[in-house]
Length: 149
Image (cartoon, rainbow, N blue to C red; front, side, top):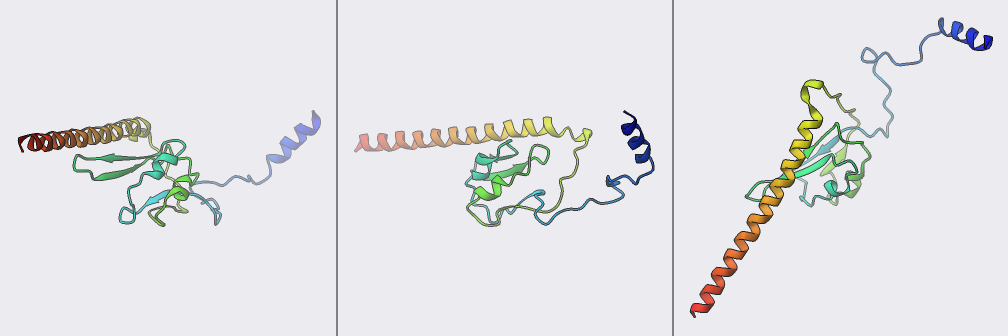
């Protein structure tokens, strides 16, 4: 008991070992896994990164013309690098050494992400349904033309 007491007293006079962030920047090792980067020009839109992402930090939305849009949540991401490993196109998705910015309460980042995630899945379902509807109309028109002949 006394040993612990004296150790605590001695620690009062030692320099703290913690980093005084943000005044003092922390050491970032060479193999640090930071923010996820995305290059739209290299992406082949296979959505493998979305499929392998353990926490679901990546999602693609799709408009009615078929154009896909990439969405990423820095608050949901665990920076495991699975998306980078799964990507068949080198450099389309990559991990930088830049640490993620902290989330502010005003951003409402989790609720905003949950809403965006749900809307993205709905947009893809709507695109798929519209594509099926158009294919059915085309098949019906082709059948109608074949019946006329």
